[in-house]
Length: 174
Length: 173
Image 1: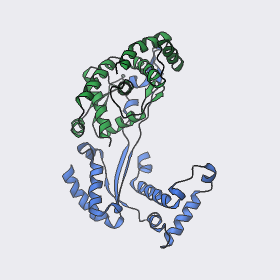
Image 2 (image 1 turned 135 degrees about the horizontal axis):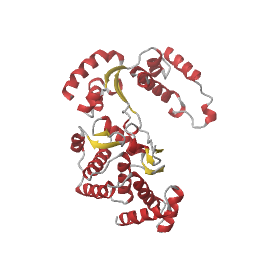
Image 3 (image 1 turned 180 degrees about the vertical axis):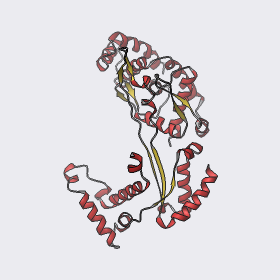
Image 4 (image 1 turned 135 degrees about the vertical axis):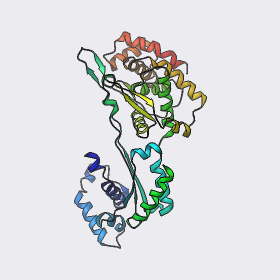
């Protein structure tokens, strides 16, 4: 559920485009560290700026805004799966390097998320009254499955060609 | 991918395994910390004093990534937690980064020291090492008092014993 919503590939592409827009649009490329200034910008302000920039081709922020507002988001051409990573641990970076060489760095980007591990350091009282480290008595706490996603995205007009070429390239990698 | 960090952690796991250690995450954490504290090796991980002694979020995250591509695996043993072991891509990692004989030797010596200890002992030893190296306290009585203050479940006598054991290792650097 969590991965299907928050780690969905299209959602991740939109996240990347929104970050790119905000880095261009915000003074200094980031939100202010002062909370009083931070409160002056709401979601509505960002949406209005996006809307105006997407409509006006002369707007300096038109390009990143249009990707978001006109459904021109970069398309997924490779989705890393565990079996690929097991056969080739660097598969995502290898596909990225290939795609950037073939289609230009400006037309390709990678998204990778590996959930950070939790320390889970705590003691538990056992039924016989002893106090033990939870890690030593539970097979679950130290063995939670790794949550990871990895995608390669390309500019929309390159989608079909990139998919064909990457599929062929994967056969040489795996 | 931080292959150098992964290679060091793999070496620790392999050596702990070879000495018959349980090789849980705590053993790996404390071994890496003690190697760094004793200045045996420069270990590229940051540590903080956490609930059960020195702890590195870096180490935890790198172990997670190593599991993700099969350099190591967590093997669950019913009712006894999990133990870490090299896995199918351990050889791939070794081919990427070669350790020096000095690194191998230092890791081996520390793993021998850590291997038979349980997590409770490791908490005391590593925290005593933290007090000596991070708080720069060298008097055993003061170290024991400080350890007891930080970890009240560790008695002053246990703290003194822990410092007595760890001091020669730190001083031999």
